[in-house]
Amino acid sequence: MALKIWINDRLVDEKDAKVSVFDHGLLYGDGVFEGIRVYSSKIFELDAHLKRLYESAKVIRLDIDMTAAKLADAVAQTIKANNIVDGYIRLVVTRGVGSLGINPFVCEKAQVIIIADSIQLYPEELYEKGLRVISACTVRTHPLSLPPQVKSLNYLNNILAKIEAIDAGVPEAIMYNHLGYVAEASGDNVFMVKNGAIYSPPIQAGSLEGVTRAVVMRLAAKEKIEAFEKNLTRFDLYVADELFLTGTAAEVIGVVEIDGRQISGGKPGKITQLLRKKFFDYANGRSK
Ligand code: PMP
Image (cartoon, rainbow, N blue to C red; front, side, top):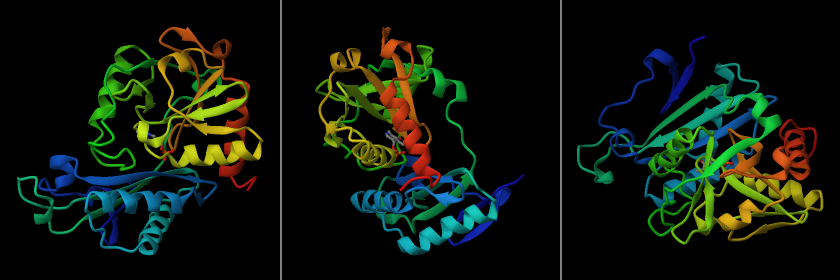
């Protein structure tokens, strides 16, 4: 079934959802975006996603000519028009139509695009079996070059790491920063379990401030599992009791091998499985 796509101020048919070749989102990756889930007809953590979107836009001096309330309404209308019960929303704000130079201020108006569709990042069996990952050679963008909190349309740094993973025959790669500390996976946040506690790199190590990461930390606290932000090294990951990744598309998924070192006996660990279950209960409204 053809989708209905939101562009700027209205829903249009998929075939009419077109943007200009002069849009700086296309020419320079100049813009911001969010990936958001819908579970059981409820938009997951919409406020957190909108906050991140507007903060990202502010940092890159992009004016979104729409209030958060209006944008939330547009998201809701797009979900409704596409009959989404369980699905995924891609909310994109590009710099808009400009000239061939990089000056963002010649662009007329930011363009808002909302796509609502289904998504499954990994096949179900990988959630049961866990992922094999590698360490990427590609160093995560320096946090002083582009703040890692900005979810920009320019993903080439992460795409280079993803290519390394695919070349190595695994689905994901762990990225390290310029100091050698763990930053994040190419499209997800990283967690380590050690002695019953969970650890995730601080944002300044070069990770996106993941919405799923924050939810998992809250859920862990409810389970009396201590959660820490800590710089992690490759050694820490190799000798972890468990590893897992979090992200809107990936949800909570166990990692069972990194660079040929087996983790948690080659299957997703107990705490990973518990947090994955708690995550689904929360996402589907079975727990607060
Ligand atoms: N890091 C990167 C680079 C991402 O693209 C994402 C989102 N796919 C995440 C982390 C996870 O963030 P969230 O839980 O907000 O989706």
